[in-house]
Length: 435
Image (cartoon, rainbow, N blue to C red; front, side, top):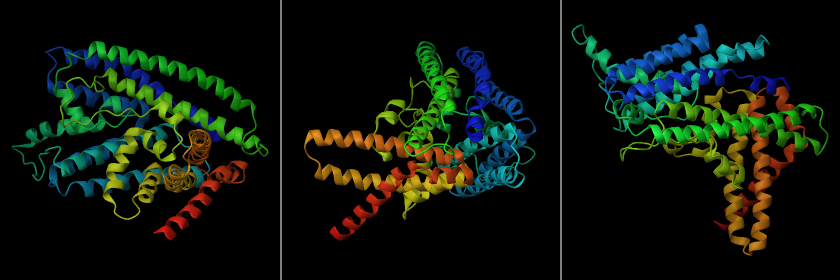
């Protein structure tokens, strides 16, 4: 269970908590008329640089370099040409850094540096912002001063024009976590008025603080249950199902707590308010829709609601751009973006198959199950099966290594995705015959 212990010894929350006073200070300064727009951009950029150095140490250079290169590419390429080079550069850079983690974990058999792991997490978030920005420029949502090479006379003007983009890529409330904030929203909040923020955001922050407190209390209880029980290596038969459910529950509580904390930090800085939002501006989508995630009986719906801003980003970046096998390509790209560990590749491929099976199973059930008692029974069984399959996928993705994956494969828990695979084959064959 070493991988489980490493997952919860996460210092990112400490750094996020330390950034809260500065987020509140930024919002307070925005309310003051004396705080200019350029000063706001510089404050966010300087805060991001300081937080990166504090959390990552020397590894912060691995985040600064792609951010600077992206700004150069944006100012050097035309709007229709900027997306592909920035995407390829950023994913290549991120993949090389992930390969460094693979080399440390699998070849050297050493525990990776905590600062390096934080850097990789920040790089993944940076990839979201870079690709979101480049797509916005290509689609005309953002007008960038591109296609011109600075000369000596206009260098200061180009630095002035580059400041919003560099500040967006490195601004401290979203450096280590948080839902994806679009450049349009970022720019509108920095350059707009914050006079309507105070009361709305205060109650939002209070509610999130209470939610985090409740989740952390639950996490203490569940971690006690998981700690005294047998792991996947020591469980027997149906006991493995309980281990699967309780361990995944602990993972989910941790994710929910982190997502709420990240969302609260963005709101503390003034980026979460919907007041005064322009019609074309993309809203801030919170990552944790806990009620839907815990009550849904649809794996496809769970996939759309789990880490919502990332799911929306993947849909826009991959799913909507592909004509053949868009679902499979989306989950494969997600595995690539996460680092291509064995457990991640298996987990995301399994998730893609389960979503495809989910579509066929529920389409079949909606036609052949008509009475409300049978529908109620079906919904209850589908909910339990969905939660157990998600738990199975979650353990595969978080375990990452082949040894942990082998324990999961050989447990009784494998029966749940196997049932869906069999139903997928049967219903796909039936659909083919009907066609």
